[in-house]
Amino acid sequence: MLCQEAMASGLPVVIANGGGSAGLVEDGFNGLLCDAFNAHDYIRNIDKLLKDQNLRSKIIQNGLAHTKKLKWSTLTDIYFRDLEILVSSVNNQEIAV
Image (cartoon, rainbow, N blue to C red; front, top):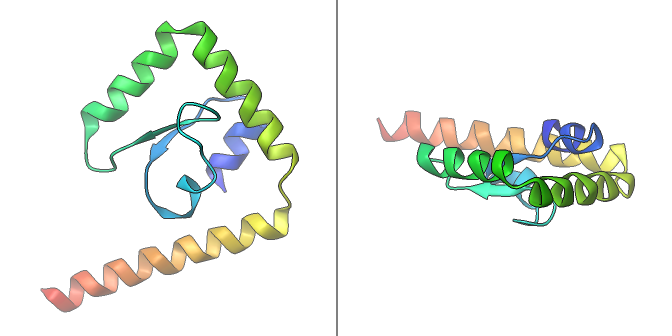
């Protein structure tokens, strides 16, 4: 839900391309997606937003428009699904150890 809250607040989002939130972000349209394990990818995308006012404005406006169509009940479903995925991945790592 943090991603959608940021969009609804007029902030451009830069998030990992994975999990439920990534399904709500169209790369280059209403946010920027990064490889979750590549810090340089985050830096590159943040730098793009800082240097490109047109891209930043487009992402902000599209993010605002996107969040106006969302329902809180849908967002909570996504949030809890993401938590289940996170817990499952942690449990799988503990089992593998």
